[in-house]
Image (cartoon, rainbow, N blue to C red; front, side, top):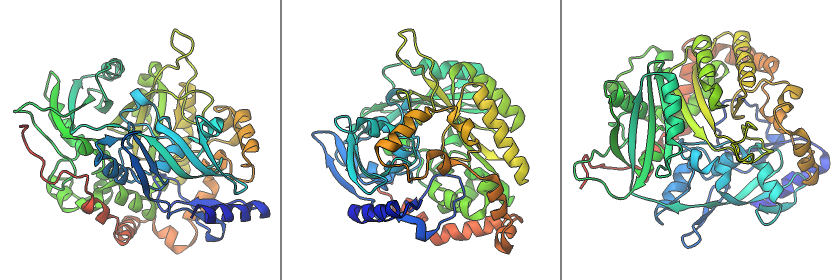
Length: 500
């Protein structure tokens, strides 16, 4: 399969023709136009090749999603240190994009757990990049969205798994308190996971987790994968709304790792809002098949709603986060917000970064990610303008966005944030100059996007309520991806309600 991919790349290289990569799935929110005659198909690379229990490594192909990876490693009593919280995000996507999760305060982005990658370069040559060979390529390709080559194999680090995550909810009553608390908790060496949810200006929750095999006899054990289970964010909100002190519970490990899958954090609630459908425990149970992240992504793209839905992850220095949230509150009015502390990767990098260091002059200060997900303006020009406003404010406050989402920076403006010379040197060394650059891959052409939206009856009709939503629903059902969640073996079939 790899030789076939390499031959296809050589074909485009010799003809000096650009091409795109077809992975078979996406967790990007950008609309893309597929041209099969200009596509390199790597969708078949989806195997877990080997789990080495002694070395604590996993050899996987790029399209292995997180749920299949966890199912394979947990059988050996192991898990990756960083697991993206949506089951359908792939290992290759986490490496080529930016994967920052609740363990990233400790381990960094997903690329930090990658020992080596096999990459097809822009001229069709197949090379290995690791800390022993082509180290600059290993570092540079992470976050470069495939613009330095096509990843065909990854070796991942693994750590010892435990049965449960002891989860603690710290309820706070203001934004500054929440930001301060989350930073304090990241300094606790006993913790394995830290993230947070801001439900409003007056209600924040910092969530901490520690891996454990032991639970007290009277401890509460909670799962989140079954249709009868609560959505995680609603559960957290209910647990902390009235409480004063910390609240503890125990969550089976895989249930914790994918706790945000049902409802896609809280994005799934927008589907109920769009269809003007009651948002109740019964309706969430009844429509559960449609409300896992794989199905939500399918529906979002097919409905055309991704053109006016804000899905942005935005990393900032701790010192400017409160200012930024004040801005999003006034300008977007979107709640809840997700908070995820991040350990920075070394510079230069294509990941979000801020060059301020600790007192030692070497260690980069951590950043805090803000997940901003909700409806934007329905009118296209206003939607673009709000996104541009967001980008300007983010830069003003020293922040950077993750590149999976809508990106409107002009090319010169984009490269003011990254080390262009370093990146271009890598493209030259590794024969990637014929590949689309990272800016060309992530940039949304607002004029083209607008033309596509108005191109023909089908695209125009998607803008009419509820036609777009109904089309998204139909396409999601036709994909059959609801069966993946139904048949996943990581799920706790009958979670105990109390420890033993």
